[in-house]
Each structure stands twice: as structure tokens, then as C-alpha cells.
Image (cartoon, rainbow, N blue to C red; front, side, top):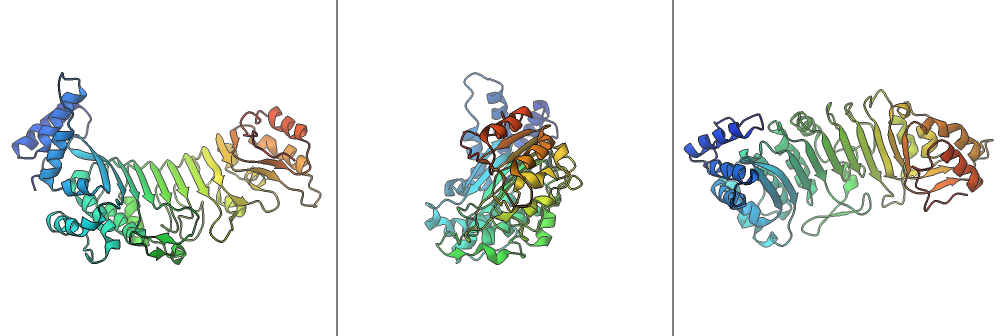
Length: 395
């Protein structure tokens, strides 16, 4: 393989150093040198300079990566001789020839673990392993892993990422799609996987998970989607986290270790049993746990309102004073027959939200209250213009 790994890639972004790097690669017989020079000319407006795509296609052929391009499951772009962004989503149309292609790749390219070539549900894991094991990905900045056979590939992908540090990987999507939480997941072969089998026993083993977060020192944006993928996120410098589903194995939504977060989005709805989480989960939103959090988006998070709803629970949160933006699904305060008039509750609690940008995605429902009284309270505090009351039911 002509990939030259004993010439240090520049740390700075200046083209002078990268052109010197390109010369060294060319001298060593690495085709990436010519591609880097062409990329430089193209970016700097050289007349009649073709785009570097053809040069990088030649690089892929020389490095043995062209079968991955042809398979169609991986989409990736190059920058300065390295793969800069990669997106994985299993392609159904090339499945018939995938076994033979993978057998060739696994014979020719580095990879971490053996796969059973007779099991098509392991092919996705092998495709991911092969690319992430290749030295051309070591300066990857943006990675998306949309998994189909996640019961195999989630652990394998996490293990592949955990084997070495990724000094430039800033954004990661990791997960699988679903319509209703905990529905039986269909694999690439039409089999069914019950995601609830991973409750309290995460898809990615704890030792692999710990190594994964350690290997991503530059990670700032993380998106997790699915059910019971990890036990935790343990990352001190992660700044933005988005979760969709019950991604942690104990079913918690907020009990993870990311003290550097400034922005958190949580999306969760009804599961296949027709239930939603209790808003008691919101009690984990403590200032001591998230000292830097400023934006909290729960506008797509459905909770059982219990007696008082999200608004009342959040009003008591130690986190609330430090937030500058808060999105909630509904603003619902019900009559509990406990001498708690809903309008009085709104009047008492609304001032606690006056310092931030409040957005209500769905209904504003203050039981028994007059529409004008509710509008007066919200508008008088400067909240009315931020609350989405266009489709609201105000009782």
C-alpha cells in the first residue's frame, strides 16, 4: 500500500507546510501528494484547474478504498490528503455482491476483528471497521454512523474508534433510526431485534465505551439515537449533546458525565407500550452536574405531566437561573384539588423564567384560567413573544 505514514502531517493550516508535505509524499511514491497540490491550486482560484475529485479517485484506487466507494454505504470527502468527513448508511442495492467485496478488502486492508463472512448481519460492522482502521481516516473531523445491524456494528464501530486517538474529530453521529421507541428493529436481512434486551446491559460494553470517549479529545458535538446504546457519556470537553430515544442503558435521560456541555437537546416520545417518561427525570438537571449549560431544548421531549407538569419541575431546578434558552413541549398546569389554583401557580412561577428565552412547542394549557389572564402573565414578563401559542389550547 503506497500510503506513507512516516512523514508527519502538518499541524497548522497554512498551505506552505502542506505543499512541503505533498512534495515529501510524492517523493515517497504516495499519490496523495499530487492530489494535495491540485487541491491547493483549485482552492486558490487557478485558471482552468480541474477539481481534485479525479485525483482523489486515483488515490482511492491506489489505497484499495475504491471498493468501499463502489459499495455506496460509505460517502466520504478528502481534504489535504486525508478523509475529512465520512457518512455511513448501509446501501441495500449492493448487498448481493457485498460478501465477495468484503472478503477482498479484509484480505488487503487493515482491520481489527474478524467477521463471519456467512453472516450478512456482520457485513456492516466489517465495512465500518475497514474504513476506520485505515490510516487515511486519522485526521477525520466529522463522522456519521447510521447503523442498521447495530446489534453487531455498534460495538464494532466503538471499538474501531477506541483503538487510537482522533485529534480532529469534532462531530459524531452514532445510532440507529426508529419510528416508535422500543419497536422491534429490522435488520438488513429482515430479522427482528428487540432493543429492550439491552436494558441495563448496553449494546456497547462498558470497557469499550470508556476507551471510546478517551479516544475523542477534540469531540465537541455528539448526537446519539436509538435505545440502550451506552451506559454513560463521560467527556469533559463535549459542548453540545443531542439524544433521541432512551440511549442510556438504565433509561435515564440526564444522568451522564459531560460537565462541559453548553447545549443539550433531548427528544423522546411515546414508546411501543404507549407510555412516556416521568418528569421526575428532570430532577437530575442540577447546576452542579452541568455548570456550563446555557441552552436546554426539551421541545421534542414528552413527559407524563403528573400533577404539575414540566414547567413546575423546571421552576424548582437549580439549573434554571444559569440558562439563557429553554424549550419545552407543553406548558400545562392542572387543577389538582390541593388548593393550588393553576393560574396562581403560573403567576408565582413565571417570574423565575423571565431572564431567558422561553419557547413552548405545543400547548399552553392552564386549567380553568381565562385566556386573557394567561396572555397577560406571559406577555407582561416578556415571555409571550417567545411562547408558541398559535396552536395552543388555553383553557
